[in-house]
Amino acid sequence: MKKTVEQLVEITGGRLIGDGNVVIRDVASLEEAGPGEITFILDKAKLKLLPSIKAGAIIVPEGDYQPGAGNLIATRNPQIAFAKAMDVFRPALLPGPGIHPKAEVSARASVGEGVSIQAYAVVEKGATIGPRTVVYPGVYIGQDARIGADCIIYSGVAIREGCIIGDRVIVHCNTVIGSDGFGYAWDNDLNGYRKLPQRGIVRIDDDCELGACVTVDRAAIGETVIGSGSKIDNLVQVAHNVKIGEHAIIVAQVGIAGSVRVGDRVQIGGQVGIVGHIDIGDGAMIGAQSGISGPVPSKAIYSGTPAIPHHDWLKASVIFAKLPELKKKINELEKRLAEIEGKKG
Image 1 (cartoon, one colour):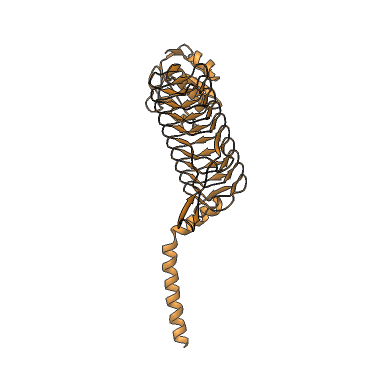
Image 2: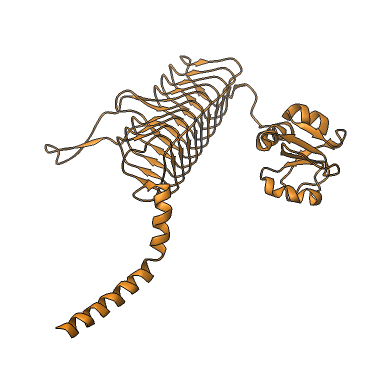
């Protein structure tokens, strides 16, 4: 694949500064880019590196640039522009349409036009797969599950019975959608725990992406929901009856207990634990490794365990680092006070 810088300007929607006739053949990182490659600068502080960058073209933030700074494509969002260039030079490699002879697709399943189902995938009766969706080897799609159009379901994914996946959803390897929720009650007759039926479903709306080894439990009754546009990183646990709003970001190793309500545009850092039956308000941000034991207001920023407002947590962190020194001073003061009281006695 070859494109001139001028053609890439049209593709990315940027503004040309320099020679538009230079030919670009690939993308590269800022540190490794050479002639014939395009790279990008996101942080304006790195613009001082422009004279030393050897790339054939550089995508930069919109602004004023001196002549001779290189072949630049100025844009409001260099990261998005570079992603568009990446799609040109390194497009996603997807298998072509068709059902592999080693796939097991029920005659009572509905498969849309242009669908690709690869070897050893299993599609049960009543399942529906929308047009142009790709199902990689070893995927399991349960009875009456519904998957929309233009989805990508990577190897090892299990989409259990009755679950609903919207359009343009990406699910990475070994993720499980619709496993039973963790529901048990002590039964004196059994002298043990009785499993509670989990008969709801999972619904994942349009344009979501789930990383590898994510687990989304089906609801006990009703739905566990992931709202449209939300992105979930690897190794995240979403328990039964959780409702996640639109365009949420949930980073790796987060655990969300049952019946939590997560609002729209919430951002949750890695390794956060959230207790069940609470609300996380719209636009809230939760710092990595926080322990959330109560509701979080809309647009609030919380950190720490137990989590508190981020500004308070920063002040507490400074004090925490000084605790050994403060303890030593307290011991000295207590000793001096005891000496003074002893002399008075």
